[in-house]
Length: 379
Ligand SMILES: *Cc1c(COP(=O)(O)O)cnc(C)c1O
Ligand SMILES: [Zn+2]
Image (tube, rainbow, N blue to C red; front, side, top):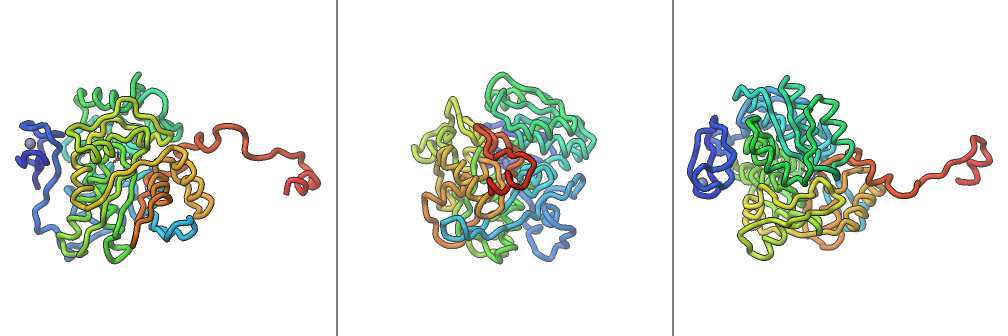
């Protein structure tokens, strides 16, 4: 097992703590010895750790992550689509897939303090897994625009929650200057856990989908899932790879701009969107994400906040799936653009994370006197 530079190709031992290539500053990814990719390996348990032969460590810290539902949705007014509901994870987002592996690796390294910058869900997940692993957790969140449920989770698990007077990108810059073991998606071990979503989708469908649609913030997830599909194919378990479609909010669309404009950098200065999980101006994993989109023949697209909120409501009312705004972005995209074949959308996080977005504005329910006549009147 080695860390390999996605820029210059140099390799480094996996046990050195590195987040970027010391030579060229590019991102790193984990390379496994080829022989681990076989179906003959005994898979124990369900969820993320079912795929232990594809992962860098044994399950040292787990809360039962992965094994989320793949729900066929036929009532959205678009061709049938499968929704992979990552809100079914222990802390309510896909971040748990990465965190169970990232924390296990931290434990192996002997780390006692772990840290992240977060728009909320990484903080919630890190706090829960650090508690389980008896480690100290430090989370930096941007001031304002973090969903209440996520802050409550980080606090209840006993993390040190620090609000930074700035946006996510400021918090990210700061946390990288601490000595703590970092568990942002810059950490290649975390991405190893997140790639298991691809394995579950392929096993459930008996093949890879034609298209996978997901929201992009720091773009670790699209990079991880693409790596997963490629490894599953290399193991001979699927024959074709899906197109990867990354969706961003119109007000926070650096990857779309760079993808379309062929630019050498990736940044917007004042990211703004109701989908706080993807309110990111300088995505850490943009080079990996653009490579995944290019290699797969996919696309990077935007949707507006209005389209996001409308898709969120539709998914809840027509399919019984309550997802947070960022997670509705793929459905918002599919309502604008038809995609042929077998389509899977990744619903990245649970709607209860951010109840305020639903309850905002004037009350949407009636109050009556406690008698039958009053009830009948409103029915
Ligand atoms: C973290 C997160 C995203 C963005 O994932 P990236 O890997 O940063 O692209 C999208 N939706 C939700 C709910 C998230 O928590
Ligand atoms: Zn390099």
